[in-house]
Length: 542
Image (cartoon, rainbow, N blue to C red; front, side):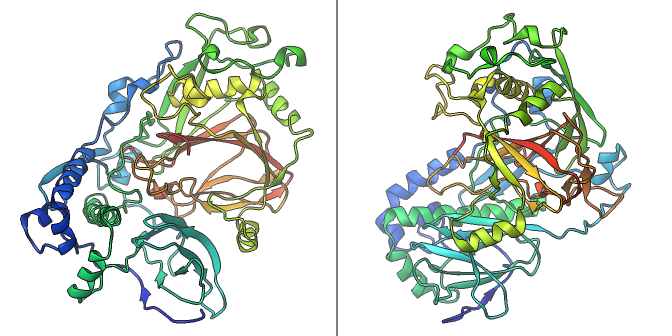
């Protein structure tokens, strides 16, 4: 790079509480002057943090109330996930408990006693890389080509914010001030198992006086933000020791509000029923129309017929079977989620819709980021909104039953619907319709991102539902390259089948992001590929 060079930062040997915790500050242990100035407020902060640390139930049953839909798991079975264990930890002001996800022994995925099998190391060596800005200035993250040339800008991080990308061992990055790329603030080289990298100019290693001066220069709000990252860093070390995974969220983050289907072993099956039966013939345009009702006026009461029932299959219920493809990450296939008539209608909607090159999550609108997008995602896409017509609305309702989420949460709501939620916006994005020609692909990536520091609820993508609309002649599989198994180092390839859905989760039952949810769209070798993505967020869409 150009300008001053900073030391290369690789993995940290430990995550010490380098700075006094709020409680330690009050006790006078290694007390900084900044702490002395705000002892009373720090006490309040410590108590609030302790309260925030008490996790609620793993799921909130209020977020599902479709009486017409039944499933094979009871509320208790959803709640008592065997992979969730009690973790004892201490942030410096007393012991606490956390319900942490601990990946089961791979032998259990084969319904065998622990220790019977050994997991295979995947050939794909990808890894999440998260960068945390623990400073008061805006900084820019660059990918470093390591050949002395200018790096590629990846993201701009506001004070106390984070950014990330799918990475691999040896991948190099550097940071600069937002307005001066000639000054290199820090360099990083990705070295698993570390996934979280901190830029912390406030703590000066080996110089307590300089560290104290930097702390004294912070306002109280800045000091509080800094302390939150310090606390999260300490928690992350203990979480890693307990789970053997990095904590990719900012502690504390609540467990998901939504249910997560269990994946105890390969081939495990769950069933769920829905009254949103298949369309078997196409309604006339004047009946299909756009959805004009708003909010609670769209609720279909128990016992009422489905919309345009006369164009659907005569069965009163549709039974959907989820089959476990992968236990870590949790991935399921649901055959015949869509009917031929529904697939034909979705593809018909592409007429007059201009497809454009797909972008990746977090892309900045720069020429450099456009170049990066071309290299990672070469498909084309457009968006289909739930209100487009009744058939699209039906697909959302069916997906809500599959996910065990009230359909009201997947659309804009009236104020009286779920008033305990902060927003009345949908928790789901519009359906993304994607087309791949021969040679086009989307390399391994994650669907989750990192929330703005000011959002203490840390909204992020929770679940992805892939809907296959055709079958390419060759290629085009969805791959989970890091699935945990004891048979092969190859990725898990899911063949596209017309009407099939694949469900996987980007979050773990404890609220952490699932690094193992890496997935890719392999190149189409012959023919073309059409599919739709539905992304659902937790706790809300941001």
